Image (cartoon, rainbow, N blue to C red; front, top):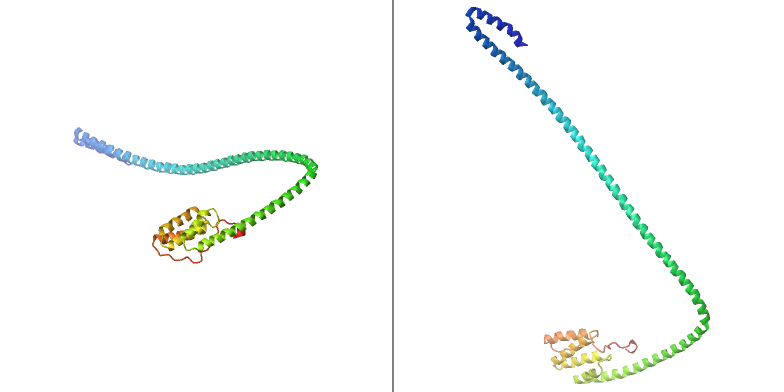
Length: 276
């Protein structure tokens, strides 16, 4: 609007100059006026463009804000949808698991029922068999009574034989023990070792072997004693003399002089408790 107001003034000035100075001066003035008008117009255009850019920037910011708001809402909505979908999937899986367990339980129940039916049939068969057996038992009751009497007599005979055998065993054990003590009382190691040689499968074998080794150790025949101790440990590993034999082997290895073991006596090997 300012440029439009100034235009008549420039025109009047040009006319006055043209009349006063001639055509050449007028042309110059018209050219200057045109450049001025062009610059003014350019300024107006620049101003308008600046205003347009500002408007566009404002619109862009608004659009960006709306986009960000919408994106945030969309993201939240997607999260809700994903959560709902996960919950639904879990619920479906749980339902499938429950159905699977139910089917398994049903199958197990069917098997149990079938087994019970089979057991019931077997029990019925047993009942019938017992009924049949009861009749047979009734018929054989008299024969059974006679058999029981016979078995009672035979048991009494066996019991008497047992007592006789135990008596004989006790007598032989006493005789063998007396012979063992007689050989053990001799100073010569060969006496008790000979007893062992003839009684290797008796309750006195480990004792005879141990004390024969003791007498050899006492008479400084450590090599012979060591062999007897080794035989005792290997052949009678569960006898009561094994610990003492192991102790003696350690002493022989260390060249320890013989010292009598106190409190070590007869330990019968696998003898009947009745005779010990």
